[in-house]
Length: 508
Ligand SMILES: [Zn+2]
Image (cartoon, rainbow, N blue to C red):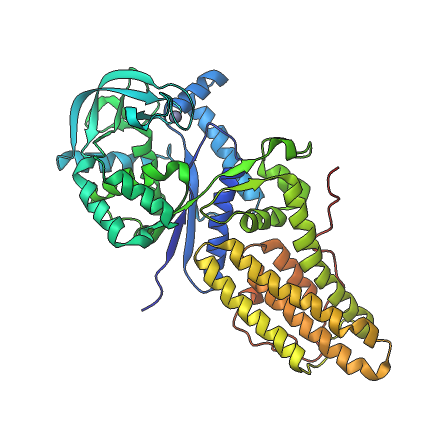
């Protein structure tokens, strides 16, 4: 049986803000995972997009003095072009204003209404406009929304309700028996605690008298659909629009912890009611904290991906995000920390190794790769990289990117130590040592080849440039199981080095 495909989603991003650090992180994670699995021969796909309906968008558009659709078009376009310019490549970009998505939402509503899962009732509740949801008294902290720190508004109105409570026991049993459905496990326990209390039913409509900007209910044109009920369904409508409906049962959602409840409770109950397969997993990450004092003028206090790319390069940004955050936990972003990582790990650890090896290759052999002659230090080096491959695969498959990268850098440190210990630059002064110098450099070309392959999902541009300098075709980046020594046949030429990561002066 062939391996099943893998489908990742990022949240669809709300168009009330332009792309920032949080959006970029989740999208980088999705892009990296897709590259990682494709390199390992899997059919991998990711979807991102924009969430465009609801109160907040209507308000933001009114403030900007434009129609909601024009407002959404502009910001959605900004997301799409930002991902294009930063090399993040979704298989599909979904918009909740896409006619196909809107038709799909109406179809699901019709179905769950027909099976008796929707009823009409009056409701009085505490509503947070920021969250676009009603709160129960006990969820508030000192009377205010825990996220927005603003008091909710009391609203009384007639609405349609989805019988969410009907499905509570089934999802509770599911999360209890299948722990891999929500990772890391702390978030699963949080959800289990919520599910041990009554979850109530879900208000899924908004009267047009209050909000017109939404998808009309197919069974009552006086109402539009609650924005979360609309947005969550984009994960399914996207693969239908992309012509890949078979991907749906293999979906893994990447989300921030702020949207855990909507994804872990609302969403599976909706899927059960719509008789659609449940997601494979929710992978939940923490927040990026920003120390404003540590942010300098070059990036400002809002981290815009295009600014970081222009200043440091996208690969350095990707590396920092994946190396610095332990998926699931909070992490801190600062420009100083990014520069430190860039200089220490990328410029020194990897970049310096590549430029030294390729420069010596050029100087001593005109770029021609010499025969290997492995002894104990070489075999130890090969074993270190075989171990790095195993660890990297193990950790990245579990979204522990920081651990995977640590493993590669442990091997790179050993390679740098190998250069210092064997000292080819000193041996080269003795003509009798020429074959030994050639063998050492060949060994190091293999180190660079394996490093480029392992790091390609995280550092795609760098891996391509490194392979060009090694004189290897970019297609070889996917050839992970190639034996050590098989890449550089007699007569193979490497090229003169070009710095992969210029050092950045630490900001004053
Ligand atoms: Zn709120």
